[in-house]
Image (cartoon, rainbow, N blue to C red; front, side, top):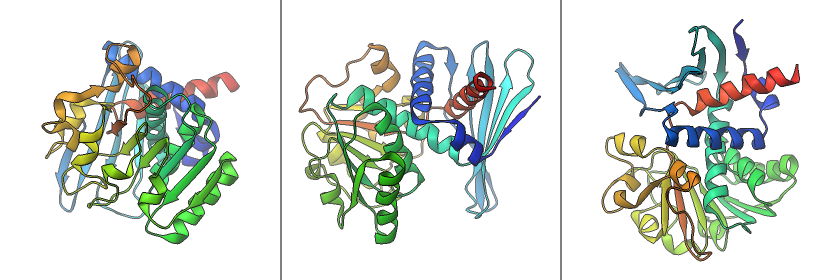
Length: 307
């Protein structure tokens, strides 16, 4: 029997702790070679592209996520999970929640691995779905006591802060400029589509961990190369994907590429993470291939244990 999940069902079943745990397992599986996770593929069509990410947990399952770039208001992502032994479709998820929670979960792992153990304040640039899941996941791995948020829309940043207070029980306040949002914060989340610099390296305090969400390229990032240069620790969830973009992601270009670490390797203890509380660490999230399918498999398993 094939199981079908809507956004509402994903939201009801996947809490932050479960999601972060699944992404931790996925990163380790990819580093160990048990999860085949190639860079995404795309097909150019008239007016847009179809994009595919896929993964194969050897001996257990394989599957894919597909989405388009046409910009239609009702466009949705599709995630399909196949049984690795029979090829049968075990589950299908339609919507945005699974992918967003996957990205948040990866960010939560990055915070857990790279941020200071006593990190308790979060500054957020952006007020959309991706910004929300980063805070949601961070609160599962650190005792967050305050969130500050900036976005261009005053109404949206007010609503974001209200949601943090209501759903997470954490003090939160909107602010009027990005530098104020990140000043003195232990964790900073950069989750916008701004093509120009919003945050400078000088705005980031020593000891801060930064989660940068999405493929940040030249003329397509809310921070400049100065932030990467200031980072003592620079990591990504998929070095292969980071270098596969055209042009490459900022962190995968010289002179930063040789310093870019695999978060899975840091998690496994094969590469160093933060070694001093004053270091600045930056995680460049690109979406390790197959992680949406990994999370869908975990969703199916969570459901099976609650029947």
